[in-house]
Length: 293
Length: 302
Image (cartoon, rainbow over all chains, first blue to last red; front, top):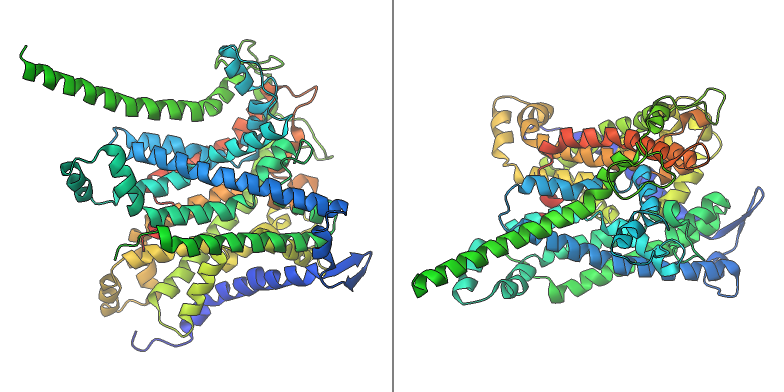
């Protein structure tokens, strides 16, 4: 703009700059600095990488718990993310078939996403998975024996995964819009060539929306690695720590036991893991993501 | 009937079956997903020890709903009610949504519509922080908010608006990278000719934003505000960590504490649950017409 003062944009960016430094850069660096110290009473002592060595030492109870949490988090994330992607793409695909009343269904499938992280609804889910809860009553209608969902490792994991997959709404909306943007002419050409619906889905739909699959995969990965509400409220990390995911362990270590330094070390590891997987996905994307010009 | 007619009829049958199939899948999936949320309404009137899967209560009672609105003094001398907890939740949710939407909008406007040195860096930092897990910031921020001199600002305050400053302070400083990102992508779809025409008429930057662009921005502003409202209203770990005086406890904390015991039956638990999500449901449905399937969608077309 002619005559625009050079300082105007910087002043308007002021809040963001302060926010970035105070709420992002400073805590990011300080999380690492804190992880290099140990606090006893009022004294903080520099211990180098001792905290990191401790949490990876299987012989120590802390290390054993941390390594166990790594395992449960990986199981949770690598089952949940693909399931969310498959379910949301499937539903979006059917909704994109020029369905009547699509607005109604779109809203219906989005409602669990609005409510799903609310404590009230998670408490409802705890009832759903209880021994005398909704699911066991439902399968009982068909004469099946009740399942101990919350009492067994795999049952508890199943219940927190189900709770998260239930909230596939936002992923579905993103897929739905991507599907609408696939040019109709491609399908017409394929139909003329005699390709069936399934063939069209695999050879046209999927390749055309790979950038969106990448986006959804990364966003869900970052989010599910930090799952907290479900495990905290439904399983409390149990039984026998089978659902003691990393974010729950970090919470317990830092805020219940008050060991901020150890918690900071754990959160740095969680950060590194998320970064490694994000980079891996982006690196791999050149082999499977197709960008149009 | 000729052979050809038969074949045409067969084709119609097939088509009907196919179209029926897709409706069956969708409706079945929707019912399965939404049944618990509908069932809970019936169950809140059911006085049985364990409510049954049928929607209609077998043992009708109003006691859950009565208690939800007249909740007894709980946990503190001042007494406690669910509606108070609801008001506490809104006292940090509303500032977050107002400040957050505004600061992110301004930030995105500057980045997309003004030229300045370091723009690429700012954009890169926003994208970079988009993928940063919130967990890594949580512990140092807690150390910051509980440090001497800072802690007195919020800890022990009786107004939840003040007591939950750690939860909403960041919203004034555009910390929500995803919202900024959504605004940026939306701004990019608006032709600059609109701005230029307004400048010709002598408008300044602010007039362009608030009078010329705002009508076009309305859906994205409402979408960002709605998503912020949902995430803040449902936030659990934040209030859990910065839990202050008992009179400031928000819904997420109170619901969990009230739980199920000898006095509270499932009717109580579920009636409370419905009351506490009601605001969320009302806000969602009233903002929904702006929610143009837009969630991140406009954000990734770029």
